[in-house]
Length: 423
Image (cartoon, rainbow, N blue to C red; front, side, top):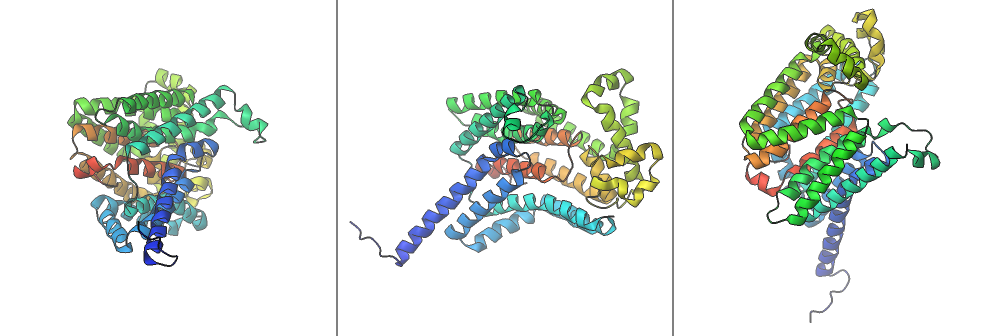
């Protein structure tokens, strides 16, 4: 029997470090898989959970490896053309704050965008996230529980929160969890379903998909409903005709980004009046009116935009004077309700062009994957972009954190061997 190492002995110190590294790694995993439940409790909590997960994984990496390995992985991620394109947009967005009417507000918006990206990069660079079957099973269960709790609360009219002193709340507060659970469900379903001889995992994946779809269509989030339809449709088409699906997604992406400044008049011309009348129940008319307002901003500042993060108070920006009086009021809508249009309005053709280039680079990378790996990733891209075109502020931290967590979960070892990596 080996003697027990005394305190202070190198072997004892190494064992303590290993135990602490395992604890930190477990804490990181816990924060990641608990994100759905955290979003049920507080619908903007995703960045906090991602940040705590990053702290756990980075701490484990520093205790079990060397900083040089972490920096090597980070350098490899940041040197990819896609990462450079995103970095160029972030740099341009920071520069554009120089002509914002409220630089401190714009800087806060920039920080809200950048922090979740940094957290996701930190987790990727740590090399500590093991995408094991157990991880996907636990995450599937937390998503199912969170969705079940949300369905129950919606059915009861949120009376529990009122009883706990939260005051009167509206059902739309669950729109953010609806979007985030849909995002996280995609890699989780894929991770479980793609396991060979995993009957239990496939049953769990099917249950997860069913519960999330039920919750999404029970919620008031029309953006999440659109995303779910696009996700299922694109996933199915990508398995049957991957090249056609990829080409279609690329064309739709380019066109949507290109027409954003004239989205409102284009929608009015293309959609028949009876369709618009039916869609009015889904706030379609209100969105189009907002698109008119922000579209005029984009056309008034076509190259450089009005400055990053200015949408929240665009009605106070000097550019508001250049918007026609009938469309000026809705500049107070907080955001454009269309992320490509928000990018145009705030960062101009330069910012929108950089984002378009980044999106095309991502699609080019997906092109190298086999159909089984391409389908869920392309479906998520299409679903996330469709959600982006109809709702939510483009730079909100919960949205970026949800995308970051989803990307991390999609970067499986099998996919990495096929050329995929952290997005």
